[in-house]
Image (cartoon, rainbow, N blue to C red; front, side, top):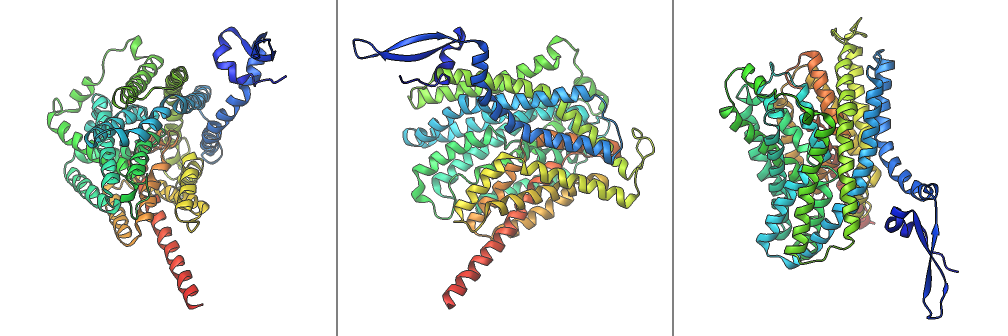
Length: 569
């Protein structure tokens, strides 16, 4: 007797808690179906391994970082952890929420992305492809879990110090998210054009970076606009998450596959992440320029009053989390469905599974947003506000400074370094990038070397970011020379290493590291009375680019030397 695995039929029959087993052949030669009762305990036994694997994936990312922060506060900073139960439940919400969300993403949204990426370049005209690419970039950004952190960050900003920044993260937070999304949409459109015409990523970087840096310098000249520079460059890191990257890449790789004959040195699929990190910066700075001219009133009081609506049940975190999830997921899913059915005229297979996946996405994002409110953001803000007590006297920590100036600063820098290093190594996307780079370079650039160079780059970026806040250095004084150095390295590097280096920044900012680092930076800035707590993510993005480009030049040098030795031999 042949028995089919129960799990195959669990989804269709779980409502009645029954499974189907095939018995012996009947007189017609067909197998008879035989219903057999099973208990809820049996169902849980079947589902348990499936859930355990996916829960462990998120557990391994969240818990080590949380433990590192908590133990640092308890042991090194000698401070208790207030609200431990609330933070613990929040972290649990983050873990379970990400588990549901990532599984729902695979089942509910990625099938659309794969189908559209495969058929769209073959069935649609160029103008349609570009329009869909733009809309996909916008919609995917709205659905990013980390986008919710921008509104949370607005609660930490002091309106007396930075009224324009406060307004953009509170009163005009919707416009801020829209600007970021439009930036990603434009980047996606340009990325598809790059694939279609075989443009060099090097040239696109020059063309895109020049106006971005020019707009940054212009903003620096204005007192109000200078407040937004750190936020703008951090937004470039927020956009490259688990929704945007796979959906946009699936379309980009599909287009690259159709017109691959136009490729020379570019690696199909690379470059989109780079552009998606750059154009949101321009979009946020442009929005800041507009709001700086039309913002009601000139005083801080006007701004604060405008962003303080009357509270209601609708403003509760649970309701807001659900509303934000529906706004993010449902329009994107509807758009993808319309593209597949109307534009491509392709059937949607396994429709029930897709609905199931979308439901998981909604539940997961809602839980994640709640966990963000009560776990990740408070934890990052709490640790960030306590760390300065290592070298400076602050009100909330008695007997501070806890250490001497030099030792205390060293502790702060090392804290940031190991946080960046460990958090980056824990990112699943980094492992995938390492394998891709190793395969693309035929083993010359090893996966371990990729992971090490990117992780050290992020660690250095966070360390420099902490020093920026400690000494109240304007972010522009760091970004300008670093990006000029990146351009020089880009000019002298091979195209394939440029692709890898600039895209490496996108894997460093996942849905866990973004809220933690943002909250930590803002908490640190408030404790030290620094004017700007943003910029940590921006620095954590540029340093991996530099480290990978440096290592790429070294690998290329070794390859050339080996070739010469073989020729002489």
